[in-house]
Amino acid sequence: MTRSYELWDVAIGKRLARSEDRAEMASIIHTLVRRHASAMLDDLELYTEDESGETVKTSTGRDVLKWADGVSTRATAAAATA
Image (cartoon, rainbow, N blue to C red; front, side):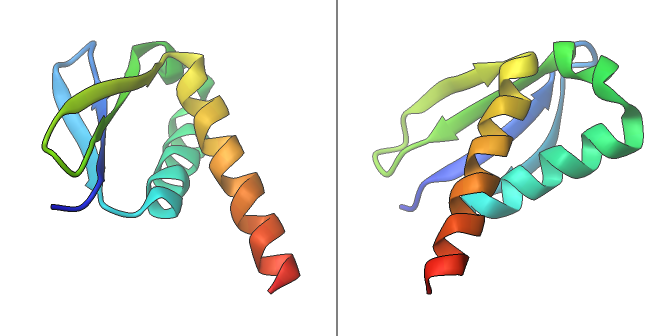
């Protein structure tokens, strides 16, 4: 089993996205914030499912965007050194 990421809107109790790719999930988060404004951040929760199938809450609220920003920064740095 591979690692996967799930993004939830807890205000409506709905999973917004699921991806096995960290950079793709970061992109999805950035797109949602651009389209729906940062006000929605308070209702977001990001979960990670590891290889053993255990699901862990990775970040909540505005920390979800910080997580996505960190992923994007690392991806950009890695591409620049490739």
